[in-house]
Structure formats: C-alpha cells, structure tokens
Image 1: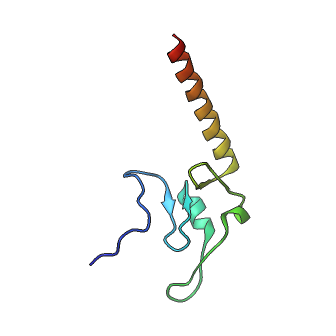
Image 2 (image 1 turned 90 degrees about the vertical axis):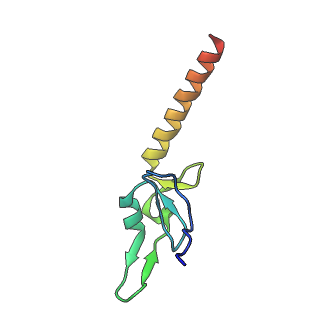
Image 3 (image 1 turned 180 degrees about the vertical axis):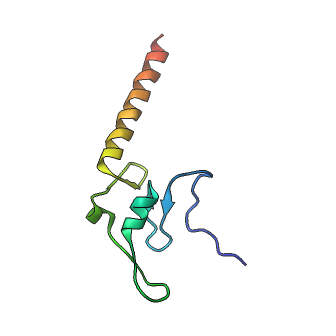
Length: 88
C-alpha cells in the first residue's frame, strides 16, 4: 500500500514541504537551501530555517523577510478594500 503524504498542500501550490522535518517553504530554492544531502542513502540534514534568515508567516510557512512584509502589506490592502465596500 502506498504511504500517505505527511502534509496535504493545495493542488497547484508552489509550497514545498519537507517530509523529514515537516517544515513548509514558499519556494523550492529555500527548501533546497534548508537541506544538506550527505553521501550515503537517506542522509539528509535539515538546517533550521531561522539559520537561513527565513521567518515564519501566520500560517507557519517559512518565507524571506521581504516576502512576509509583502504578504502583510497585501493583506492590509485587501482589508482596507473590504471595509470600503462595506461602507459604500
């Protein structure tokens, strides 16, 4: 029987989940940087995301600090637009 995935990501998602340490990253580049593949079968060392300068967003996904700021800025703009629509 096939093994069950440890994390279900939305279909078509750009997120990358590490099956070893169960951290989720916003890009394949960040995911690759967090893993160090050593010689020998099954030898993967997961680096702490904080050591790579990444920060966790409100959903627990690791991003660059610039990515988090951009996300929060977009969320703020969406909230403002929602409030304006409810007033009008």
